[in-house]
Amino acid sequence: MIDLFPVVGPILRSLDPETAHGLTVKALLMMEKAPALMPGGGKDDPILRSRVFGLDFANPVGLAAGFDKNAEVIDPMLRLGFGFVEAGSVTPRPQSGNPKPRLFRVPEQGAVINRMGFNNEGLDVFAQRLECRLASGRKAPGIVGANLGKNKDTAEAADDYVLGVKRVAALADYLVVNVSSPNTPGLRTLQGRDPLRTLLGRVLDARADCKLSKTPPVLLKIAPDLTDEDKADIAAVALESGIDGLIVSNTTIARPAEIPEPLRSEAGGLSGKPLFAPSTAVLGEMYRLTGGKLPLVGAGGIASGADAYAKIRAGASLVQLYSALVYHGAGLVGTIKTDMAALLRRDGFASLADAVGADHR
Ligand SMILES: Cc1cc2nc3c(=O)[nH]c(=O)nc-3n(C[C@H](O)[C@H](O)[C@H](O)COP(=O)(O)O)c2cc1C
Image (cartoon, rainbow, N blue to C red; front, top):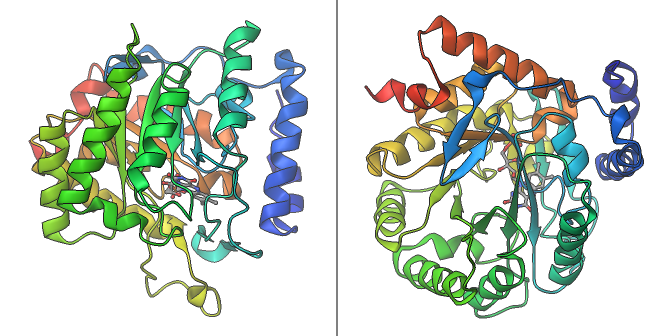
């Protein structure tokens, strides 16, 4: 399969970013009608296989939440070579999100700023798509996560996450409690010790109430903008609550010096290259604070195999990316996998799992 991105990429980047994203999703939906035409790069190198929170991953490279908010293109994205795809964030009721424009490229820095505000079609549409997919018999191999959010106007946040868990627990391989988007007022205060303890307790009770033979792991997705006290509290609550892992991290509200005006004044979360160093530092810190006992998913600024490998060495068992696709296209997924496998072998690791947290030893 020829990589069309050198031709299509500049055209997409000449359009408004949200229009470009919409067209990309439409193209993926069309390609899914002819799955044989989708590039996939064939079988993954066995050194990239791993078992994390009870699930078998053919490779550790995932699509981060926010690309497929409405669970429309899970299979095409898996066919492009991702080992796992996280759909969402989904909220119980549909909502339109913030006024446009709300998505901005920062091209020189390989970055993106977004203040989408959980625009999505709501839990029913999302769950029906997952149901159709499972019933179709045409699903691509790979792991599927459902990332849960709350509606802007819901006062009792935990109620929304409970609704999410009950509706999709049987339909996804893992669930994510997203308390780290900077674009829903008050959301990130749920990362505080007491609200977090209550929230995770209710989420795990809701999961137990589903009485499933196959219980989906529950992960918590955190922000990179946390104090030392926040991080210590999250580590302690995560371990005592019995959740299955953490995703580190969401976008940052910080604006590193390299982000130029007028873009640096746009409100929202910054992702892509400038997020790599701070999110990897938080990842390493969470690995240390949890004593390596809780699987971590590393996200933030991954744009190469070396970046992905650095996240693994810092403590991630899996990685995710989104922003780099805007600048490099989906061909990047294959490159990352090939380069990661080579780096593992260079450093004498027999498996991906052996390299997790290597920087801490
Ligand atoms: C346009 C956009 C929308 C996003 N929407 C969500 C979302 O709905 N839920 C979520 O948990 N993270 C969301 N994210 C954050 C990503 O999942 C990821 O954590 C972050 O972008 C860092 O990875 P990256 O630097 O590879 O993009 C979004 C990111 C972008 C760029």
